[in-house]
Length: 136
Image (tube, rainbow, N blue to C red; front, top):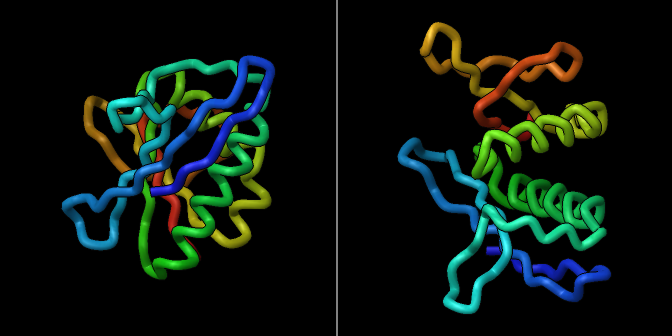
């Protein structure tokens, strides 16, 4: 678990990243959201605190930290809503050149109602249902 703060015009919000193992060995789910008083994480809240770039820079640092500390691991992430998955795709496109030097990025696509993992393509307009990131 990683914890950090979003500090902006609306105040300070505690953010959490929880990385949990999936059934397949070496694969992990990457969960992210606002920390709730009851200890849960709200992955659907829209804080809109004016520090989106800092928040995503922190998330990228967390991904790098986890993959460096866990060689051979693969992180899976998707948005809690289709709109958030689109936002993740936009971020991947923006940072693809930087990220692709060290990491292999693949996406999950639905074709004829069948899910398949394909190499991530930042140039074409592709719809992805989720993403995998692993160290090259």
